[in-house]
Amino acid sequence: MVVPLFAQETFAGLASESIPIDREKQYQTMAIDWMQQYLRIDTTNPPGNEGKAVAFLKSIFDRENIENQEFEYRPGRGNIWARVPATVANPKRPLILLSHMDVVTSDASQWKYPPFSATINNGVMYGRGAQDMKSEGLAQLMVMVMLKREKVALDRDIIFLATADEEVDDSGTDWMIANRRELLENAEFLITEGGENPLVGGKVKYVGLDVAEKSPFWLHVVATGKPGHGSRPSPDSAPNRLIRALYRIQNYQPEIKVIPVMQEFMRDLAPLQPELLQPKFRDIRRAMKEPAFREMISQDDSLNFLFRDSIAITMLSGSEQTNVIPAQAWANLDVRLLPGEDPTKFLETIRKVVADPNVTVTPMKDNFEVPNASPIHTDLYRSIEEVANHYFPGAPVVPRLSGGYTENQRFRQLGVVSYGFSPFAATEEEGSTEHANNERIRVAEVERGPKVLYDVVVNLAGAK
Image 1 (cartoon, rainbow, N blue to C red):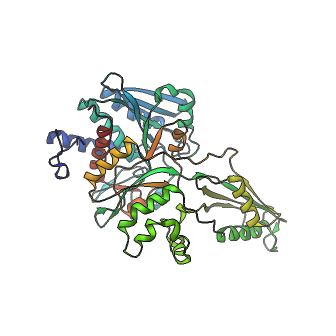
Image 2: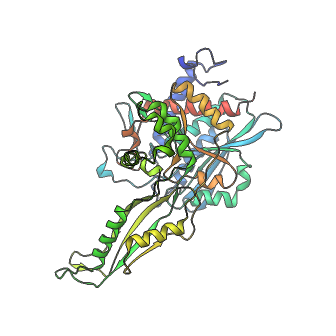
Image 3: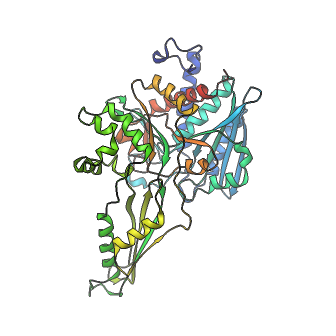
């Protein structure tokens, strides 16, 4: 049975105990206050400066008498680990609550409010990291404090881990695995960023749980040509060759493929579709044989990238002067490959698409992280289903393929069942501010998110 943190109508008749209203309000106030403090710490990566965030989190753990350790592996950069231990003999394997402290860059001139101000206006909190992912880190912090204060009996350790450098090189997680593996205690489960709970018309449409993800295979494209003065253009200049190569790449469509997780995802979403589409979602492999349906999927930005390898042109460079034709021009491609794809074959295909001996295409990294996945028939998945059913009644919990990289990829290699799960609901507009201007979250979600995650943790790890 779910033991909710707060008495509320959706849990009526199910809760065996609840928190008094005064502590309910106290936790909500703490969540808002700590979220603002956390957002105001500038951990833009590069350079990161996560040490400031570590100090903030450690001060709370120390004050709450929660066991913790900090690890500065480079000047100004580090991780923080904390634990609320099991209270039973022979406990089960731990659950890790994982977040990263760094955030991406921001241009303050393009924001309604300064990106590190944590300004609240009309019930909305603005700040870099409000979506990715200081909000979830805050919810995890609150869960640790609630477990400690409420003296919850646990049948497994709950580990909090906040890492540095996820947005660039992931050196924080790599350092932790290489140097302090014993603190991960052979964990069974892990929750981190990912998933989505799309809010449509004031109601959550579905609860998406990331159980697999594509893998980055970034490519560097370099065109060479004869340099010269800008007043004497040449059709075979490096910039012109690059533009033609990128045009061919842009117009190349990788083959549509239906992997198992997407087959289940579409089947679970079938009841939410218009009547004519329901049978197609239930049997997506068959539906993909229809040209009209394939075209519909290809034109849907929310689905297209989940059925094929994706290519995004993200960086371009040529001359540093307008009147100089450079000898080289280059571009970077953010490529994401589906699970099971061969990066060598994909590279060969792109080189054939470019079809220019004066244009090279090479991987930006020597090592390729093979995409991986976690099973869905687990106690953690069921716990999330049960809790979601009460907070978001009528919204199915569906497995998702993530198009972006998360630290789940690293921990699955250690045998940890790792899910991307968000305790927050967001409209499409709110979700689109991740890595964009005016990143924000509703204050009501800051208040509710920790409740949702707390109930998932207690439902999974509460001593029966």
